[in-house]
Length: 326
Ligand code: XMP
Image 1 (cartoon, rainbow, N blue to C red):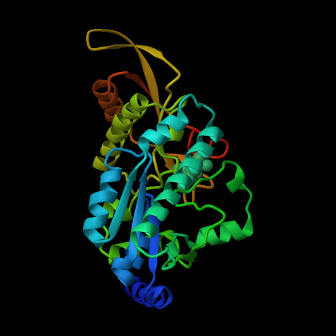
Image 2: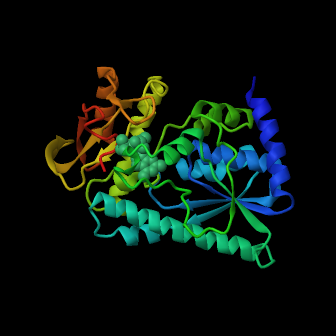
Image 3: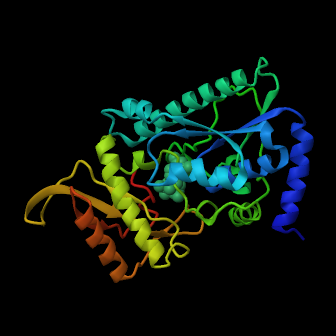
């Protein structure tokens, strides 16, 4: 029988043997899988690993800081942060089609990541020959899904931050390949990662870019971030984090609605709360959140976020609705 401790021990030994004295790179997305994979490899080969975090500017409040500060504090890993938000916003300017947004974000991500790789290889001094390994947080269900081709994964062009160009010259290190999500969380805990990282709910690679219905702009991102932070804060305060799978907050940026806020009539935007319960995200049901929690979220968002004057609740199961709106 295994324990988190025995998995760590076994994987650390395997990684050491495989990587030897060469160097490895690991892309961090802010999610559990890449964080735990990186922490494992860091435990095994420490300074031979460089982590890369591409900040696409589409993360929620506090998430980039979580990678920059908390992950580094917990692991001592070397981290290269690339602030590419300007570049992503420029590439997304004028784009409203969901698939188009996903493609652009995926494409830009790969370009920025490749450039960061090249810089790391250059900094490593040699012609880069000793930077030989790329760490990926592939889990057992990912392995099964890509081998079994269940079909549904193709409904949207699923872009996982950390996703790779086709012509990679790296050998892959995938220390989580035999694990399920709950085991990955236990391993992360064992490695001393904070709960905020280990227990994080799923969040899509394209980030808030696919939660703004309409064009993605800096102002709209700021609005959505504020509303999202309030919803997350209240769900956590109500002790509901473990009960819900995730709760996207969606900004209907191209829709306006009339309201009365403060001392007058406003003409702002609605947001949608999309709390869902699920086992694996393939199917989902809308979460029956307590009315008083919904009321608090609604009051706070409309009081605290200028330009949002209506909060609506998505009561659609999956299927027919997907979890995300785009
Ligand atoms: P849907 O919207 O298809 O989402 O019901 C199912 C689950 O996948 C997440 N999701 C993504 N995750 N890259 C990701 O890494 C993506 O492009 C992506 N799109 C959706 C979504 O948040 C939900 O958990």
